[in-house]
Length: 263
Image 1 (cartoon, rainbow, N blue to C red):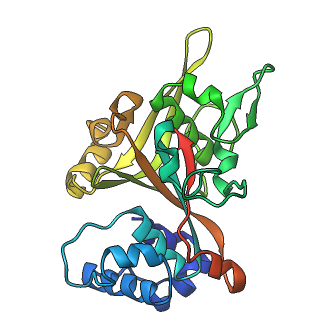
Image 2 (image 1 turned 120 degrees about the vertical axis):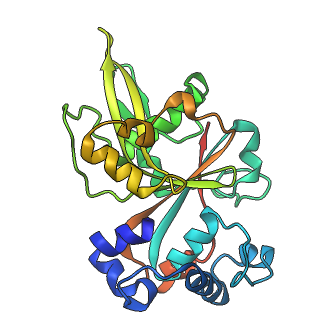
């Protein structure tokens, strides 16, 4: 789904993705493209995990393999990790962790991490703020997704808004889905936000979803997922920034990194 969107809406992606073929290859071909990405030096540790071979196998791949594949074409695939504080040392993006560089750095996802200041206005902060521990796990992830699709416009008016943002690859416990949007309702006199993710699940039949959408009946059961459904201990997301990397920037993309959000 991520590749289909890139080919449909990103002109720069059309020219580079899968050799400019303008279509999404089948699974065996995608596996071969991933092996080519590994051979170019993208995600060396991930390649070693699979012994540099994936073509023809039925082994599971995940967010990092998707990032390596997309980055090999110069696409700026970004990974966000949502996990408990105790897992910090397991992520390369966390300053001061056992395996992280000693330089304090933040990724481009910082602009979607928001907390409320005294004035009630949102302001960007790093994801390790102690405030995040006071917010429920579901709210942390939901607010990040809302800020991503709304581009940090916290006071978006009511109604349906089409954005130019790509979908989010959503990985958890051996299964991946695609977040294509988010719904927000402001409840009560305090205008407390209530969110629902709009998710496409490859386990659902396309014809059934299409029928429900056309008839405007039962589609919520297929697409809408509230905060109470976010019960997994960890989640990963992937999205693709605009532009094509080359030179030094492309070389840096060979190392798969992520942004850690305390969950």
